[in-house]
Length: 310
Image 1 (cartoon, one colour):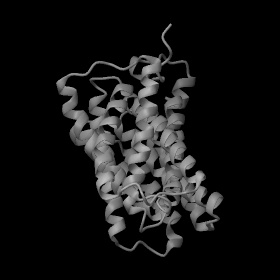
Image 2 (cartoon, helix red, strand yellow):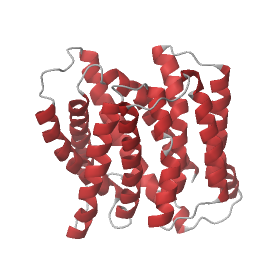
Image 3 (cartoon, one colour):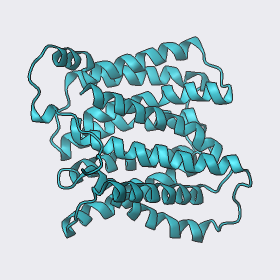
């Protein structure tokens, strides 16, 4: 369980910094075309990963009934709305809107996956959300805009994709689900990008292309794979609580890379966010149980990434 939390924390740190990197990249590339190029790089990485480890499972027609909607909602809608929204609102505000994802996922998981919403999860999530408002407090409030609507759509589509992915991984391996859903989503985004945003207005800076491909492989490819494996391990509701950390990470990365000032109020908010996540996930309790020598059940076994056969 501790390993799962560390891996989820790694994913959220990468995704939180993605707000800052995404804001930089949309100044260098058209948003839909940027999404298409990143997804293409991600797809090639995942296909190569699956081929190398020989872990690609067989699919049935029933699997595609979930994979196609997952690719459409979790990839086309999510990526297009995310980068389009970042054209008009700042990274910190976007991270605040997306911080609604944990409670959205928890409700959807309770309805569609019959997962339990515990009192600790509710209290911890509320504490974390209070901290989130402290973190973004220096911006002077949140003003409705078309960009915010796009980010809200990105949040809802992301929450829905988590539920679909959790349902899908009950039937097939997380690696197989991740690869096929990404490839299907990419095949939907690329035609839209080529029609709406021809390949003319792209960056001439080499660093922008390096940043594009590195973030695609790391944040969408590797982190997506790790997240989906751990999603099957601990459940959608509990995993989504870690998403509350994204505004905190966006604030830190913004300070380190862009020099965005950090106030004492934001530091207090950050402590509330971290404390809320720790409470909601029950990290201390599970850690103490692991160290007490109690037997670990099959549901408590750590899911690892695929290893090379032989």
